[in-house]
Length: 280
Image (cartoon, rainbow, N blue to C red; front, side, top):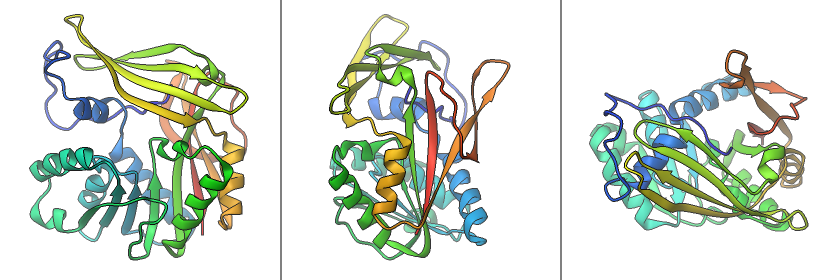
């Protein structure tokens, strides 16, 4: 359900090369959940469409292993990125990983800091990305609006904030969905959903060809926000306009095609992922 297919760089290893004891949960997460190249290009395309100029300075909130920030600085020599997160273990893993693939010049244009996204301050940026639904950890309108209001204050006068969201009737079901990837199976497990509060408890598990399983590699205690609620909170935080970008369908497979286009009407499908762009 709440996944985005990642693009792997370099040669893929043969199936069966990992087990629960040898697998790295952050590596598995990046491969199964993230798609930074597509998202970097999406931010670029939408920003240019809305603001008629090219964005160069990106802030990545809840940056974790800062995969998106690293991809952004690789996109062109003028790009810079700043990222904030509170998990120092995850950030350290990301620094070690990025040091292997980024040039010194690219690393110098990426500033990753420990900080609470609700209060962390940086030089005004062109765009802010809060992806992988991380802001769903804010469970009340007061907290979510407070975060959005602070994020807006960190944008340049014509800046744009980007968030993603997921939903569909299957999102409200307590079930496990899985997807086979290169040498492992990704499982998205909705353990609990409360229709009164909107709270949802999700886990990511990884299963390997030898039968071993990495259970609860990641756990998310969120509120399952809907698109209208998110847009209303963005408006109350002071954003002037919001736009929804809906994923198209590959009619040969019936699955999402990875192409997100601006729309005013969605589809009542079992599961979907969308992006929202909020203009300051």
